[in-house]
Amino acid sequence: MKKLFVLGFLFVSFIVKAQTDSTHSKKFELTAAYSIQCPLYSVNSSQDLMLTQDTRFRSRIGLGIKYYPFQRWYGEYSMSFSQEGGGYIQQKTNANYFKNSFLLGYSSLDNNRIIFNILCGFEVNLLLNARLINELNGESDNVSDYYHRVNISFPIGLGFKTQIVNGYYFGCHTYVSFSPYSISSVESIKVSQIIFPAFQFSISKFLN
Image 1 (cartoon, helix red, strand yellow):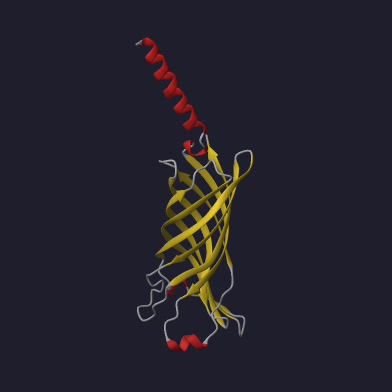
Image 2 (cartoon, rainbow, N blue to C red):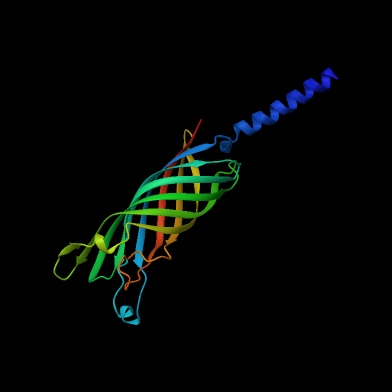
């Protein structure tokens, strides 16, 4: 009986050690990310189709932390400064947000050289400022009062990461984000924010 107990203890110790050696047994992962994204405003009328949409890329930078309650599933919170906006080539808006992202992700096994993952969730976006840029005369006006101070968006994305050196991972993701609610505070104007395409590059490390 004593021998069985010892063998059982050694077996359990082996299993625990194997799980401890797994990357995802380290529950927390810290991430720094930089994104280039193309923000667009939805078209409200057929007349707007005659105008050329503003399709410039803007930047987003942020920090986040992932928590792995299970081997493959994780929850993530991140905060970021995001340059958004939209409009048309002749007249466009620069809108800057402080974003709080709450995401749920699924990651492939960590014993692969490349780890793939998918994610979705929602973001609470706090407007910092918004300016209307007139390319014809070079003037700009503060239009923050015409925006809701807070709006909600829903991102969906996929990508991969790979270990580069000393436990640090490089990641590359693409995502689309959309807000089904009007970001305009003017009742007669319905404007939705769409971000597509967007590409995110990140450096991350699991915390011991």
